[in-house]
Length: 455
Image (spheres, rainbow, N blue to C red):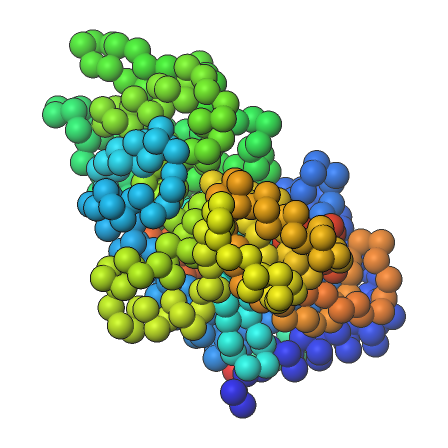
């Protein structure tokens, strides 16, 4: 597509950094900002980031927005059918307890308030393929903070002098709007319970798994709008009765609105009284659970296999089915006795994902430096576990200049874009890149800023 600008704009930015000898002062300014704001990864103070951002023009942004929103509508429709049809639910092969909790009504209109659709996007042709689905807003703080760090560099100043209409996207703002709108649409199951206009928002997760810096960012932004929010350790939750009404509380008091970030799979792996209280509160309508359990099935590794299953042909329109075939990798369940010949013959063309949750870091790609015998053992283990095997798509490769202690010369990396949807509307991009396969485990990756140039 001749109107795609992204690759040329990023090459121009890299050239400016090179002219500045690596823009050491800009890197230092970016490092200082990141250390003082929301350290993104591992509590190390400063994330691995790139001075050069992902840059999108109007054509690229339109392709990604349309693709994300179309896929979001498809996943919403599949979720609705999952809830209505027991035979269709069986396609997901979920454990019984997991499945039962996904059937708890949410009480609000949008089944999946948040999604991040991980995408491999070719910046030269406009082609894209999805490579993962998460029903959370994870990565939003990285997306914003690294973009702000980039904007402090001399390279950005010079680039912005050449181009008009540069702006950044705001996924955190989208999350806040989605929280407000979802809560407003919630119908409490207990008649007569008062709905405060500005409820206490509890961001619920396991502390050892929580994205603490991301939650801090969200809490700060909510406070600016007069909404009190706090992190809630799921283990602290309980249900108590006061003035004849049951309510969900933690050690600090009632929690009327819950933004659930604890994955359902983790709740089942780490059972506790607090997790049981959260489930009971959702079932009885004692609190608005934003991120209801019904959103979990489409975020499991089964989703691509289900989308390509014959049974889905009766769920989607012909246009939606064509979209799935064009943009969702072919995927199948592995099981005992299945024919492994095609996967052995095309080892480099497949990736095995474990059964159950997202667990992206445990995926194994046939191209990942293993011999035929090792790949055979991976396939056999997948058959025993009921894993999913999926077509492998190589990541689009481009050049970046690394921030922090990185050198001044560009390096080549593979790219992945996480496309944020809030109540079905596209709200931002989490861009990252790495040396290793983005479809499997990441040995080392860099967070990227994301800029939009409206020219």
